[in-house]
Amino acid sequence: HTIYVITPTYARLVQKAELTRLSQTFLHVPQLHWIVVEDSEQPTALVRDLLASSGLAYTQLHILTPKDRKLQEGDPSWLKPRGAEQRNEGLRWLRETASASRGQHGAASDDAVVYFADDDNTYSLRLFEEMRDTKRVSVWPVGLVGGMRFESPVVEGGKVVRFHTGWRPNRPFPIDMAGFAVSMRLVLANPDARFDGNAQMGYLESSFLQGLVTMEQLEPKAEMCTKILVWHTRTEKPKMKREEALQKQGLGSDPHVEV
Ligand code: UGA
Ligand code: MN
Image 1 (cartoon, rainbow, N blue to C red):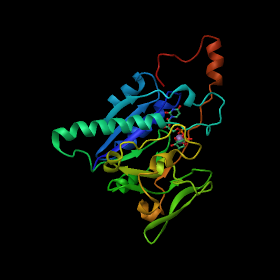
Image 2 (image 1 turned 60 degrees about the vertical axis):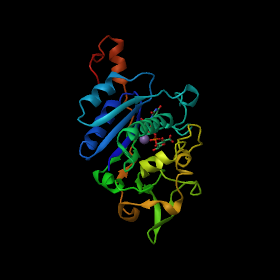
Image 3 (image 1 turned 120 degrees about the vertical axis):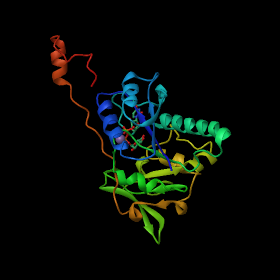
Image 4 (image 1 turned 60 degrees about the horizontal axis):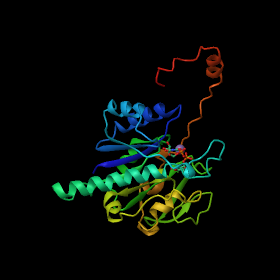
């Protein structure tokens, strides 16, 4: 089964480093198709060149987050959801591509799996084999998230019965984006399922999963949700103090060198 990985990404100093790390993880995963969705008005050369030389099967998309939905400089990072428009654009492409290819050679990619992989997290290769046979929605713990060592579905008798989380456990699905995968069949059977770019803090994942699946139907992976195979790591913003000082003297780093 092919795994379609949808990654929202945006231009910033660490973007190329993040995407390089991610692409080199994905190179180790068989049958993976990477859908990279830039938060930009146009596709960028940096992402285009990186993908072209990555060795991966990929699709490059782009959609700019509308200004009123985007975090502004100085806003706290939890104020507005990030990557919602981009994930929806990835879903739109998948549905469009699936319906186009169905006409040609039968139910093409119904067996595929869709995973939303942010560009800054850390992914174990084992995670992809866990999700590969997802029937509807599979789930597993996520490390270093939500102000916790990990958040996780709690499994009893092989079923998810509640969620281990430090915050609003009664949200419909208190699961980080990195903690679930969805079958392509379910995505195609629910053409209106999408992320709500206006969702309040912590409800972005629920806005998509609500209506797709119930808690009882979730498929626990990673040894009944006892193993951490993905970490919600966040990359520090590099300081440019010296760079700015040197630039003032006309001695800044060569702007033609892509970082
Ligand atoms: C947490 C979750 O892990 C995210 O999946 C969720 O989208 C986010 O909260 C949220 O509440 O919206 P966090 O680490 O705070 O994640 O978010 P980021 O990693 O900064 O952003 C998530 C994704 O969106 C990344 O792939 C990032 O590259 C992308 N992004 C971020 C954009 O495309 N545009 C932006 O302006 C910012
Ligand atoms: Mn992140």
